[in-house]
Length: 205
Image (cartoon, rainbow, N blue to C red):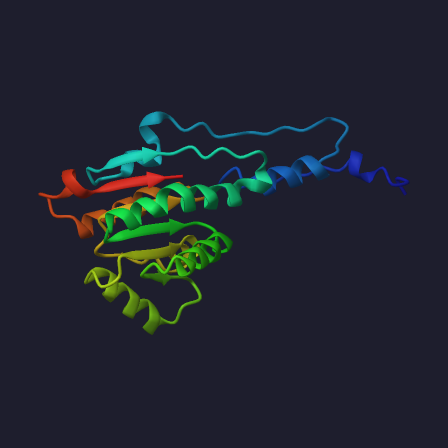
């Protein structure tokens, strides 16, 4: 009826809790209304930011990883982790390190890297059996495994309280802002008041 011009007259509304690049790309590609496009973003005051909900007194370090395009974000982050972060963990023989990985694809890449470097670790994912998760959490808490990989989807669906973590690395920030303080506050389970200032640290790439 509109001779292929319907895209220029229809109204397209996308609602999301966070600014995901895939959602923004879809909106730009398919929103062709003659009146143009409009994006409304909720402004969060600094005193209401999710980082204000961090209750554990730990040093927090943000590390910027440069990349040429959005499609190379994952590979650039993995390269930085492989060249800078992992060698330091192995050199210091750092124990009780929790690595939060938002994407399952990134988890597979990091897991394969650790296996290749013969690093002693356990993982908690949304696909693991309950017995595997319980066994891995126990070994991490007891210090028998130095590193634990924890996926974002596992936290989304299961909301585990990981005990024994003294160091935390975010392999990319969580998509949901409330997950950041929730995961950081897990360090309270692994640090006594005496060692919080000395050993606790949070790094984000």
